[in-house]
Length: 238
Image (cartoon, rainbow, N blue to C red; front, side, top):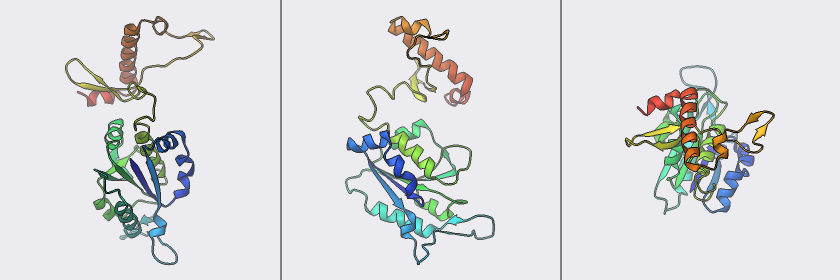
């Protein structure tokens, strides 16, 4: 899989590219990370990438020319064997990101992420993308952090990057119910040594060695925690 990130702040991705999950995916040959500097596609001696919005208003808007020229160059370099390319813009006005989205993006051969900045992007950029992604109902300085979130969440799911089974029972994993429906639950509580820490003890069932009882306990706890913290997940599954 190839992930290309278009940004005006490429230096922000230096440590991200060296992080464990990304580095391991690259070492396994599962991931190619391509950081593209939008400024290098801006014309003129000043390499202008932003401008004031038509109609007035505060702040600056990313110009469509440099962004779309960078996107065209990236798409032109896409491997001819790639079965599917998906282009997404990171913006607060996008569709909320979820684990389900991460799982679907994992099947893409080339994922292209465009980082917004300033007050936003020229609206004409959006007609050249496949989707708009938001990581939450708040505003950041730019789309670089959201791009890292998306890239990390997808890269960790690539084959071999996690220990076998590690991604099967974590927050937002799917629980198949007897009636054929599915739930996405938060993860059950986890404990490690010591079994008794200053009077706070690990639940006895986890020390019992009874795998069926442990499985039932964890499922019940995952459901309880989801009801308490994210009841919206249960409503969405109705």
